[in-house]
Image (cartoon, rainbow, N blue to C red; front, side, top):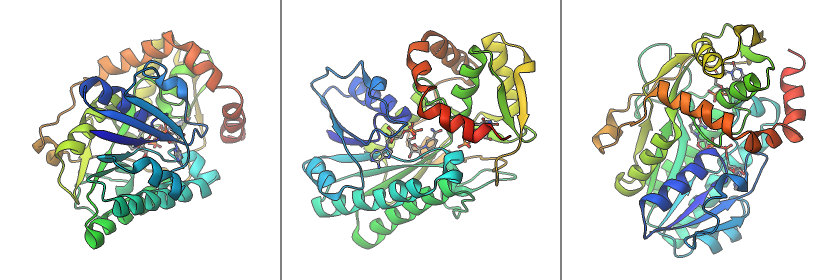
Length: 332
Ligand code: NAD
Ligand code: TYD
């Protein structure tokens, strides 16, 4: 299979490319990535010399480039996106450009070139905050911030291309991922690296918000299952089954890093902060997937990864990140 992966220099994309090259000896991968602040070629340093892997620097919203790259592909897996909720509150433009218009550009190429599969990676955040129970794929979307609204826009556009043009779309909606190579703006790598540096852990609001944590390798395996066995026009939820309050997660990270709870610094809440996400994953279980990694062990191995890869994350926490961090947390 010739697979075009977009956003492959990011967190999930780089783990996904590594998974595909390991699991499928006959596959080749073209990685189209714009290398925004979140894209990092170092995430794929270990596959750079694999003859089955090609990197192309570019934007998914560039119609000509997308068509050139996608010609002859068996599938496009779209992981390119602006992904951080806090940034979407400050600078939503890029979210609309990439998460909506970029998806449109890819869909047009899939339609014109008759590519047999378009897998669009989305998020549980499109269902909005869920007070009780768990979201099913048939539930309406109810996004409440510019990130999740732009992701929902991309999802709806993709489904509209299935219904109107029979473009072979499948969508995955996963819960919060964690693991190696996650940019240190997201809560788990931020808190691990801050703890390792003995700097405060800025906990939003009352710390009682709930996220369902999914180890990134499990998500990559699920995306691969949907890519090969999912039905056209369908959505598949992918959850880890690990619903944890942020305060409990923070205590776990401090225990694993051996740092004191005095590092926890309550800060002003994120505006419109969704309280809880929760996914019903019966549908993808019917495709034969279940998460293989236990939460406590995966969190421990993730902490060890960041402890051993200071060379990877320390450069990321200077420059652009420093300016973002000051802006995001400075006034709180
Ligand atoms: P990330 O922010 O780590 O990486 C995004 C990648 O996309 C980067 O390499 C960036 O350079 C690239 N990119 C951004 N705009 C681009 C453009 N216009 N053209 C080409 N490349 C572009 O993101 P991630 O956490 O790996 O998320 C990947 C996908 O998974 C996203 O669609 C996100 O919405 C979804 N998702 C993520 C999570 C999570 O917990 N991280 C959970 C559910 C869903
Ligand atoms: P995040 O990693 O930004 O993912 P998302 O908002 O997409 O779920 O945040 C996860 C949870 O952690 C969320 O409830 C917000 C909270 N959080 C903090 O308390 N402090 C922080 O500095 C960050 C980045 C997040």
